[in-house]
Image 1 (cartoon, rainbow, N blue to C red):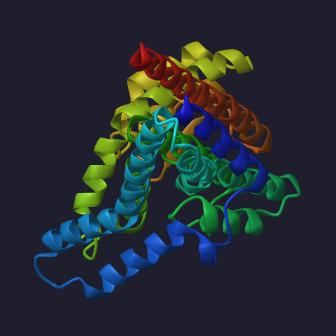
Image 2 (cartoon, rainbow, N blue to C red):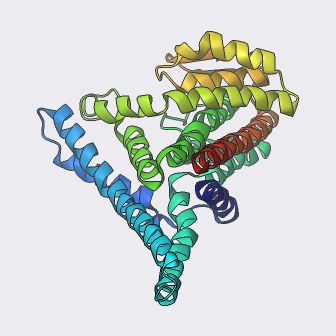
Length: 333
């Protein structure tokens, strides 16, 4: 019950407040760690350096929360022991209660930084708003700043809209489903470990001379960690398409038939589901083409994609939340 409640509270914090300022955001600290590793990486044996740097970074960002959770569990057990000692337990019980409840109150704030739906949604909506007033240069800049790593300077209106939709589809997995699943399975340590590895893949996971070996370990590990969340999110998008009045059948068909066209073993599942649901083709020149239909991506289609994502996130949280309740109630029995 505790983790289920914490997920809901963290989601409320995200929707109400969004991300903290960059100077306080832990993902920025993760980025600084990775930038330092890039500077220190030797010209040879870069794969092994990258592996060691990622393992060290994972420990740096996840182990403190492992210690916090271990201490909280110890305090809870101590509280139970003192509760049974009627004669001398009142003072200790009060102390442990304060510590225990303080930890519970802070828990959602510790979980919030590892996922971010409000900022993802706002970034996509900002691109739609720029396109709505025919400000293509601004839309290109916003897409490059917040959503994709490719060069957007020559993209057409339709290509900018498509890139925003692609990023939204892919990042529902990375920004919501996967980190919340990690938290549900193991608490804060695996959730923070996932966020660091995903950040490492975003910064180092390129097939260039500099990153081919340095970023191979985090890229492969991120693929493995997202294997189940991406497929789950893809099917949730199919359900969301049905609930939103989109073409759920086409969504499932495109997802199942074309998901392997992307270089990532995971991105094609969610992108294919969205392409089929909206009847559009999502493509990146020379890399992939997910043909869900002939309709051109535009502002209207972006807004439909946002509605799909909203419903999908709600379904994802509901599924994880209800699964936690079933598991925790089963353990009590």
